[in-house]
Amino acid sequence: MPLFIIAIGIVLLLILMIKCKLNGFISLVVVALAVGLMEGMSLTKVVKSLETGFGGTLGSLALILGFGAILGRLMADSGAAQRISNTLIDKFGKKRIQWAILLTGFISGIAMFYEIGFVVLIPLAFTIAISADVPLLYVGVPMAAALSVCHGFLPPHPGPTAIAGIYNANLGRVLIYGLIIAIPTVIVAGPVFTAILKKMGMLRMEMPLKLFKPKIFAETEMPSFGISVFTGIVPVILMAVSAGATMTMSAKNPTRELVNFVGDPAIAMLISVIVAIFTLGLFQGTNIKSVMKTAGDSVSSIAMILLIIGGGGGFKQVLIDSGVSQYIVHAISGSNISPILLAWLIAAVLRLALGSATVAAMTAAGIVAPLIATTGANPELLVLATGAGSLIFSHVNDAGFWMFKEYFGLTIPETLKSWSTMETIISVMGLGGTLLISVFVH
Image 1 (cartoon, one colour):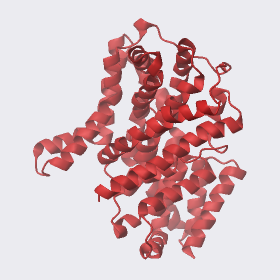
Image 2 (cartoon, rainbow, N blue to C red; image 1 turned 135 degrees about the horizontal axis):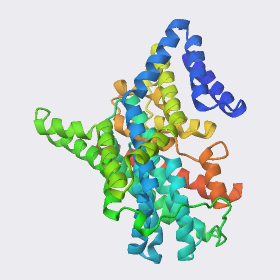
Image 3 (cartoon, rainbow, N blue to C red; image 1 turned 90 degrees about the horizontal axis):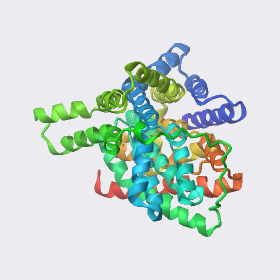
Image 4 (cartoon, one colour; image 1 turned 180 degrees about the horizontal axis):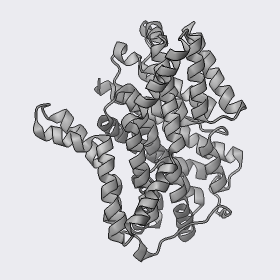
């Protein structure tokens, strides 16, 4: 019966988001309340459970995502992202232009949410395609692949960071394992897949310029390449060093405590923002008032993402407090299915049905989380499997599908062949990489 009630809840989520056009936050809260009541929770208890899950999930996560949004916007508004792109293009040359835009998307994508990164880098993709006289998709697909891979596998992005909170996973190890998977995945989904699209006749030379309204910085307006790259990867460096210290140093070592403090995701992001305020703001001649305005504008842009993640956390807590999670544990305990595969499958089905990768990932994590204690599954690998599943075959119910279609001037069938297939490649390779790592990590 509890599994039937969850099925009803997921169907209700589909109806609210697809038929009624409600956003993910409202839909998740309504479904969480409905599932709790159907499971026999009292009105007071279900509301309390929802509030506890909402607040518990957003705790330090709100700090991480808030600082991440500020860092991403400072990189965009200072011209740091354009500097990274321009320098890599100069160094790589026309023949290896794809690798330049791939690295640009990867470096910039670590610090930017997908939507922000896409809008920031799309003018650069147009500019590169025009100046190098290559088809737009030739550079656009590697760029989108890099951003999507970062969004699915690498903290401090909303998806993996939020899932890590639910699974109680170590973000530093998620980052390290994620990088191991991300590098081959982005190569296959980017340059290799673009070569396949070329053979399919998908790479046209015409430029769809109706949405092309770039802000191109002059040479003197941008920070240096070294400063731009360093500022963007400060949080990655700090979290990676912290993860290394945890795995190699004694718990009583005072150096480890200090390293773990600065490598804590919230502190790492705070440090990176402070660094960016100087390197991308004050040192570039921008006054503090303008820098703070950028910070304020950036945080307002992620309000709905935060609410959706909080709603997912509330739904997760209702599943736990109503006893559904324990029922799931008992139902699956005798099964031979890998928890990693199960997490990927649940997230993939929800992604196909709902469109939103974040909603799919949060809902799947709430269902799978109880299995960690009974199966001994590695929580960091479950984060990556869930993130990978949430990326599969983006189609007409996903905002990212329409962004890609409109900016690149594609038809719906062309978008399915390019964008949707690219996302599926990332998802499947993410699952394969996670299963491979699970052989060596327990």
